[in-house]
Image (tube, rainbow, N blue to C red; front, side, top):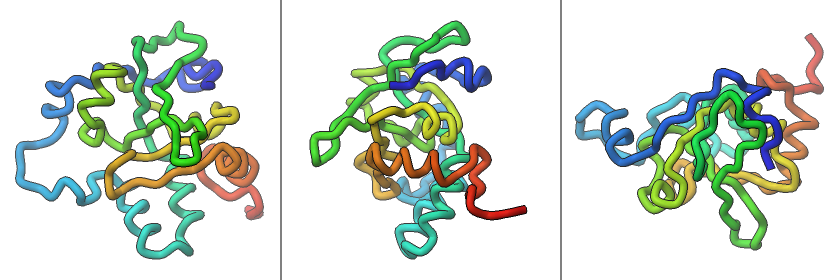
Length: 167
């Protein structure tokens, strides 16, 4: 699934995604939980409102730090991270990715309590025959199937630039 993740992103962080940590990550304000809280989420919202921005949303994903959940703690010595797998509506495997720890539902934390922070580009380069869903169940979400992940790898550089553009 995610081969050699820790070697590709040695600076990835593993955090326990407990309710205590999630509550502590956000200031105690009365904000709308459906409002974007990261630049990537702002791009998701823009893409939802204007499908012509889909390439910019993917470019933003490639540069964004996202979290996946793991049943086991992931360290620098971990060779193959095993993220929590879900199935999409078509029954295909997808990993759940989150833009912020506060976006992780409690039921997911119960199943896989460790949040591993990685760059979106690391996910796109590492997934084989598996798609991903960003913020499952939240309005600021989208899904890319396995074929779409392959297309992202073919069309985008790790820094989010389109491979077809010349400098």
